[in-house]
Length: 566
Image (cartoon, rainbow, N blue to C red; front, side):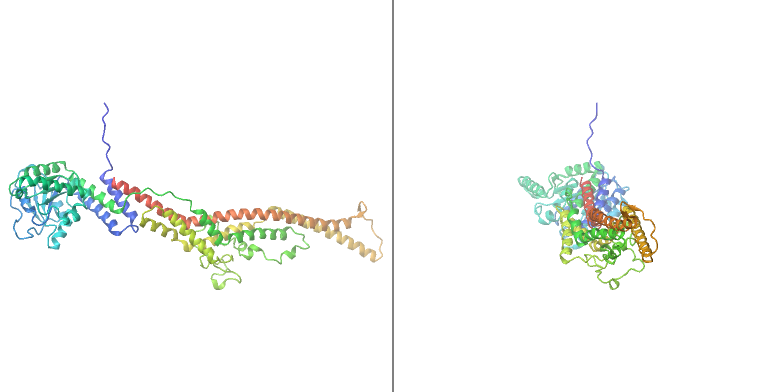
């Protein structure tokens, strides 16, 4: 027969670890009071677990005149606490111990110097009963002592009297705030001997209603009279059950963890991540002058193609025109930076020898600034306009807003801040990837070299024909006999070489220019794609990556908080 086992929740250790993890992740995002409170709970729980778990510390807490000390003496079987009409009577907590061997370190941690062995029946073995000062005492030190011990003891026994059981100070300051601790709480209606028997049930029903409104449904309520002994047997039996279980300490710690986790927030499902890179990449490309660079790539390709493959007689004229890419200081910067993938985000490499290092040393016509206004000192791409800078800022803000949607306020603010955290590095980083990526567009196609060789061969043939004809004209001028001339049909070879070489050179140059025009368009498209990818990578590293890190932090916080509250 297969035994059915009840599924248990996370262990106390795992919940403590989760609470500490959530507190660490919430550092700087949530109020310091909640974060420090969670750490204090974890520290307190760690200490309590190392002390005696065979003893259960129960505290009698209540208002002035509720009869805590009388009840304390009745349970202990001796007059251990002073009882009188002068209020407050109890000024410091004291302990009564049933079989208190080994409880010393626990009481030292609680800072309870007054300790008495109980003389009543030994059926409460393992109980450490504390008599606390009045929680509404006129002495501030008394109230602080109550607050301190209420946060530490294993079991809370609230003693109320028929006159003050509905006191707002008790319900608002303690009971309602300790709703998560109902598993380690008892409520005793003392002094019932002062009420008519018919009134006791009405007071108990009203007290039950108040406790239910405080979120303490199920908390036991006992009617007791310390003077006559009414209800003491039931109270002693209930205490004996709690002590015998040896679980009040762990139940208390579990409730502390639940309360601390609740103060950190409520676990929420992580919002769906939206596509945030397209608008940002487009704005960065526009601000970095990518369209201008792409146009310069096409024109520069055609310019260099004419210089490399044009007719040698006229190609020198093209050299008088500046290369569009070199005018932007891109072609000359190919060696200034490593490959795009090796660029350290936000860190500019040292300027190469002979390159201006500051804005005052920039060559004429060089802006030396990126879209953010920083000095870049690499390309001469015109600085971004105010409209373009505003579009970049808007795109960054939109990234933060889209990522922060549906997040709680503090985490949403942290995500927005993460989106802007490295925005000052964008201009320099984008300018560098534009320079290094565009520099690849200056590579010379192999066919340029072959056409260049062909052009020089054709030019050599034309020159040979010109020299040949020149020699013939000289011989004719000197009246020397003409040598026989080979012909192509009726046209002499010198003329064929001269005219044919000139026509061939011009034709090759025209065909090469057509090929260069088509190649320039292809290279511009490839460069545009490469630039968008490279600029998108910069935007991802400097804007989206911090946002993703913050979202991942929130997701881990939510997961840890869920484990802690389980």
